[in-house]
Amino acid sequence: MSLPHALLTSLAERPGSGSELAGRFDRSIGYFWQATHQQIYRELARLEAAGWVEAEPVEGARGGKRRFRILPPGREELRRWINERQDPPAIRDELMVRIRAEAVVGPTDLADELAAVAERHRDKLAAYLEIEARDFPNEPVSPERRLQHLVLKAGMAFERHRIAFCDEALAILKTPL
Amino acid sequence: MSLPHALLTSLAERPGSGSELAGRFDRSIGYFWQATHQQIYRELARLEAAGWVEAEPVEGARGGKRRFRILPPGREELRRWINERQDPPAIRDELMVRIRAEAVVGPTDLADELAAVAERHRDKLAAYLEIEARDFPNEPVSPERRLQHLVLKAGMAFERHRIAFCDEALAILKTPL
DNA sequence: CCGCCCATGTAAACGGTTACATGATTTA
DNA sequence: TAAATCATGTAACCGTTTACATGGGCGG
Image 1 (tube, rainbow over the protein chains, first blue to last red):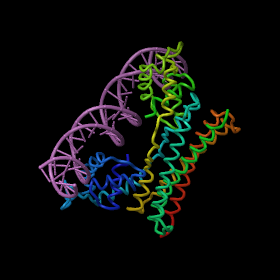
Image 2: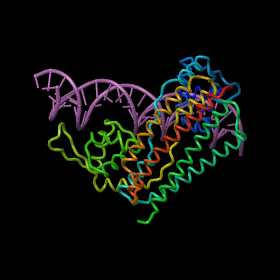
Image 3: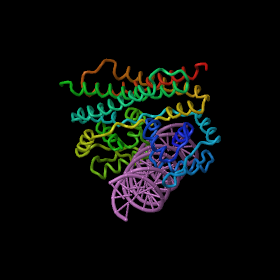
Image 4: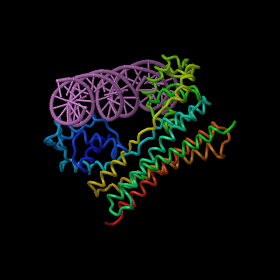
């Protein structure tokens, strides 16, 4: 359960309103942790009640827009959480289930679907490469920037891995009996 | 939502009772899709109500043990599901959030935790390698076996990827300022 | 001024997790 | 025959997802 800490991280990077945070969860942070605006507003209310963030109304904005900022206790909680012991996540991969199902009740038209999946992974990889070219034209020096670059490269590695997997599975499926 | 189809797949591979299926979800299938016995019994009841599986009491076993087997409509449903259009899964990776948090409120003792995470991934990789040596001493020929091997290799690739990521992050964290 | 969109929020449903419960069968 | 364990099941909780609701500016 990382949503509160993903929000604290995002607010530590830069203060923002609920809707602005929802936008960040469609980009940057959202590449590794997703959240809808409903989750975000609910969680912001909890963070505020806990005294980890505070909000002030934004003048001249429509609606009751409020800008949240992280407070020292929020920073402290974030640092505590970073060092908390966590088990590596279990893999939960529907594609593997499907391959295994194909192996037992196939053949089916899974190849078409695999090709489509690979294509979407290629698109996502291309998007990451654009981000990298824009944000990291040179290998950064500071640990902060190097860590940010590393996280981005992990996203790219994931997409490459899925593409290679789909291609290999396709090769097997297309092998004549 | 793949649980019903993971169960159908497992039953297509071999009939079994609820508790036997729970065992498989701690091994084989469970490396890619987890389920507790509570989920399994609930879902088996649904599959039975849908007419996709049937059960017969197991003589001489304790409790009301019942052996489930997949029925033709269940096979048909599984084949339909395999070809269903699915979006690639979104990544939801707590470790990435932590790295990003470290970059903004660090430095912390994240390095210790990263080393521990890498160690657990090494253990899991070793377990996969043992399975591979036992189940795939030679590269198989049939598409079924090749697909099963591919799925196992995907699991190993995932562990290797995480290990490399942790090691690289550790190198950055340990760089003197 | 009417429709659209922004910003915030509520409500219901669903899947997954954890804790607890029950009976029956081995085992000590 | 008491304790441990197997096989099945119920109940409560939690986070996520989807659908709906409200009010306030902005643009045609």
